[in-house]
Amino acid sequence: MAFINEQTKEINCKVVYFGPPMCGKSTSLRYIFKNVKDEKRGELISLSTSTDRTLYFDFVPLTLGTFKKFQVRLHLYTVPGDVAYEAARKIISKGVDGVVFLADSQLEQLESDMSSMVELKEMIEDQGSNFEELPMVIQYNKRDLSNAIPVEELRKLLNPRKVPDFETIATEGRGVFESLKSIGTQVLKSLKTN
Image (cartoon, rainbow, N blue to C red; front, side):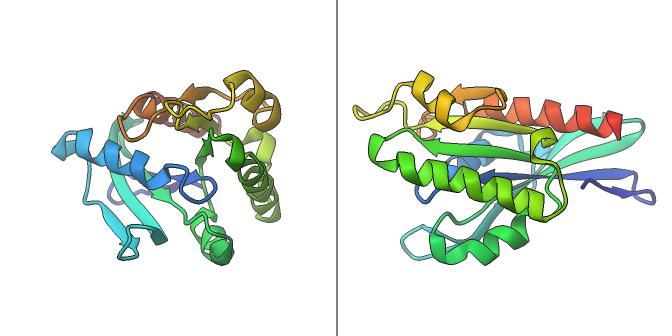
């Protein structure tokens, strides 16, 4: 749920990058951070292990512009994908305004992708929100790998809502900004209707 600060004239929206372990959530966020103008972003905060695995979250605030005389900011978070960090995912995802779901396109990761999507749906509904109305995009990541499942198959299994989806290679930034623009647009539209 967007946080509106009347005194500072700011609207802060929370977008979470969600998905199974090692699917490219942090890589996507770091690419965004490195390629957004300094005046449009805050500092990258990353709580990760020595092997660069996300321990709790990554965070980057972005300034989108103004809406009804309010400065609009997107707060981008990643969540750790490992099973042991379910509690952290619940805390970080609380009050989310939009989700970028990252699916690992590798065949051997399909079960993890599907489990992660089920967990996301349950988590959103447990918080009292309607999953079907939540602004969301899907990134089918790692499209450059030889064992990538055809996108049509991934769509059938992971995108029954038919939300905007993108083929991505996060390490190269391919499709990452398209996903960000899509989720930003959806979140702004949801502000107008609320």
